[in-house]
Figure 1 (cartoon, rainbow, N blue to C red):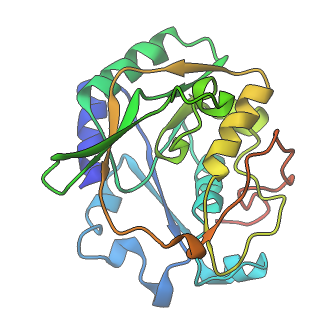
Figure 2 (cartoon, rainbow, N blue to C red):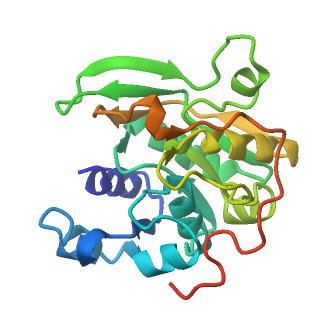
Length: 242
């Protein structure tokens, strides 16, 4: 639903798109091309379907039965072919105002900025409003107010060069609990961008986030915000043939 909706809106606003879907450690070889809902979608010529096998995950020393959201996004960054990269999630829809604002920003961009939306709006399956979180939240925290760290995993837009050479990808330099889901690494990459000279820019419009059950805090790998990081050289499974 989200892939098809987003592709339609991006085409409407004349943004040429390659939609990269990272199929992370599929259980029992149940890859998305074999899924009843996704099989046709991943065949779209605009979609690049990347499969990271459980064997690859295990060889890196990670748990193949766990979902490493941000390591998967690193694989997407490394294997994308566009000049610009938008990081998002499979439960996110871009509204028309946001895509129109993206189009304008891309035409005017000088390669020195990263872009965040005005807000993230939680909606139900009928796209009815549930709650809204503003990106550049005025709460006295400079990470939020100035850098725009809240819910960054739902939408970060900048050049591929900036993702690789400025932000250095999502942090793979520290051990991650093999049984807990990752969190807050999206805020850390925004801090890395800012620390390395990129200018935060606010777009008009919102990401619509389809509401769903969320893991209990004990199932999350809570990492504090950092003042930046260097990351490992081969982040994004650079040394592995995908």
